[in-house]
Length: 213
Image (cartoon, rainbow, N blue to C red; front, side):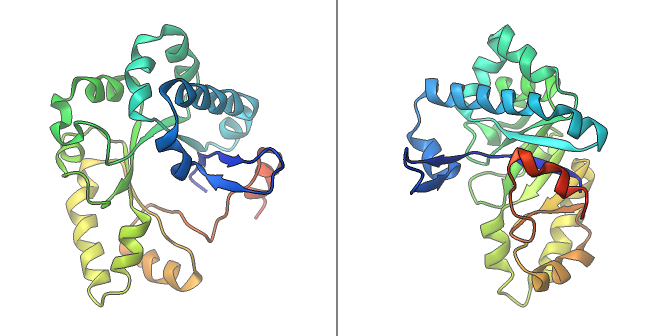
């Protein structure tokens, strides 16, 4: 176990309908995104000893609308910076990502926080920000992986990505690993960590089970 992504699920008041964050986030106002980010930080605070004790990373998605606020709001900055195990996850649709280190906000974020590119291969960005060294870790997009897995060129294509990207980040990871068969195919390819349905999400109350397996 390398680390855990802090996620949220939105539910109706009666609990009958649940929706993942990625479906709801685009509809949230900046204020709502701010509140959600703060709530995730508060959740992280309740279980920080677990991450420290087991030397795990916590990945927290940083919406573009919160980036400038994080750098300008000293209280929010301090709350995030207090966790030495926290890494901020950024998606390919981050505005100006293709500018790499010439994107002032992104460059400043990388100076203060470890960053992870959370969905490399989604098709919305070039490799410039990666080659500029802005990301400590890079995660290959799950949809990209699952589409490529259907092709006979999957293995050599993945080897090529590993060879191209590995020297520009500390860790190259792969998402979309939902079956044992897919894990068996991905395991020899040189990735440092795996994410997918084989390791389903758990509530905070069950975190300890993750290190007992």
